[in-house]
Image (cartoon, rainbow, N blue to C red; front, side, top):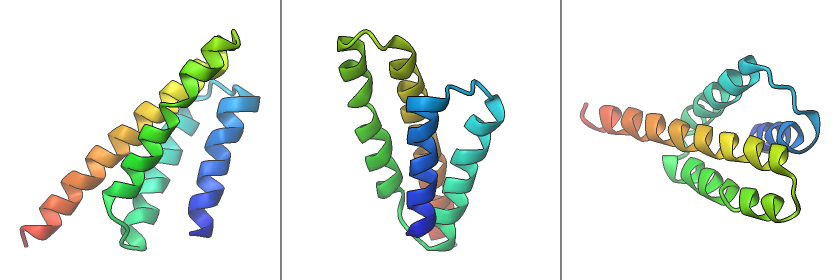
Length: 97
């Protein structure tokens, strides 16, 4: 659970403040997220909740003319939704055994 908070904190810091633009961060964090969720045996539901809740941020930031932050948050929302899809596919594959 602490690692989840650290990963979500890293996502929010990157989306709101850093604006790294480093593609490695966009690759590393969702992969780490999937491995942590699999290790602690969390379902993909948590990942989808995070992804969908991150979709609430871009419209708010666009209202305040913060387009770059809105774009970063939309990218993170997309990545979490993709990670959730991968996670649910892994869950389905594991349940077939």
